[in-house]
Image (tube, rainbow, N blue to C red; front, top):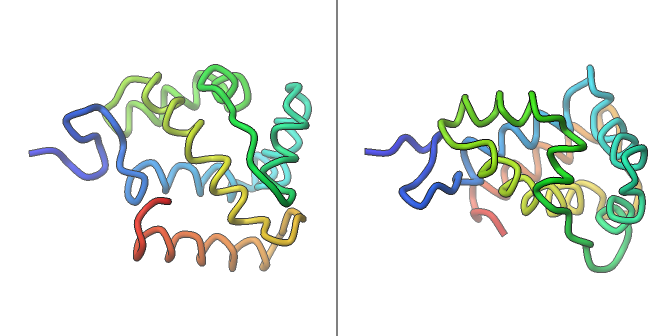
Amino acid sequence: MVNKQTADVSGTVPASEGLLGHVLDLVRNPAGGGLAGLVKTCQEKGLAGVVASWIGIGPNQPISADQITHVIGPARIQAIATKLGVPPETVSGQLAMALPQIVDRLTPRGTVPEGKELEQSLAAVQAQTVTQGPR
């Protein structure tokens, strides 16, 4: 039997459970500056255009698993992988697919919410994902 917070038999992490919580922690984490801090880190790491596409109106540009590891850091990727019981490459790959969608959902007006507005947006995204499943 496979724990929902680990992986299914194909090695993927169910977005509605384990990985989603870690993605939301990344954008909620005050120590990292929250969503604004994550955006700033992406910009500083040379991904300004990519993250701007997630926030703005229009299609989201992709981010690679290697770029995710560069932005978030290999230690954090490894920590998430350990908690979920999957290889770090699985985590960075799944984050590369999930993060653009989550940031896009959190910024429907093309601006980065902060404080109470961010918490409300996070709660709405989490509720949508749990009831509808990942998009």
